[in-house]
Length: 162
Picture 1 (tube, rainbow, N blue to C red):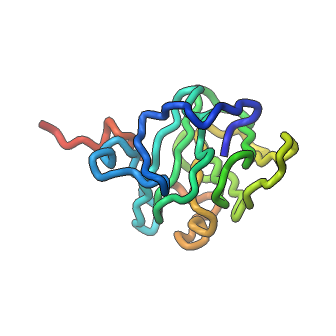
Picture 2 (picture 1 turned 90 degrees about the vertical axis):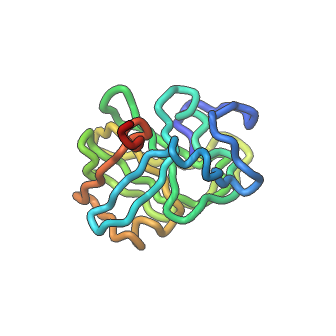
């Protein structure tokens, strides 16, 4: 999934080394955000907090581990629009406010097979600060609904005190 209108090439370096299946190795796990759901499940998410990382998103990934995702963090509240161009896996897209409360969900968003730039756009009618992309069906499996509050621990918060 990429943020419209940005579309970068597959060769963009995202700071994560992925194998052919899009998996992140154990050494990089400490660079992932940890997101706790109201029912106690933990989601591990790559953090897209720069323009380049947000533009690249999950493009060209052919798989994503269970309970893993990508957390898009924006510098301000806005109506952030996403599309599925060059995204190879169906997704759940969750828009959240600054406190991590889910304000909108687009569930089971299919891949876009169009070769032009006319893939459907997905957005929230309410402004959001953060967006979480998960494998399709994960939001339902984890019982995530609008109004659910996620607790987000960014990578810098995951380190144990020395």
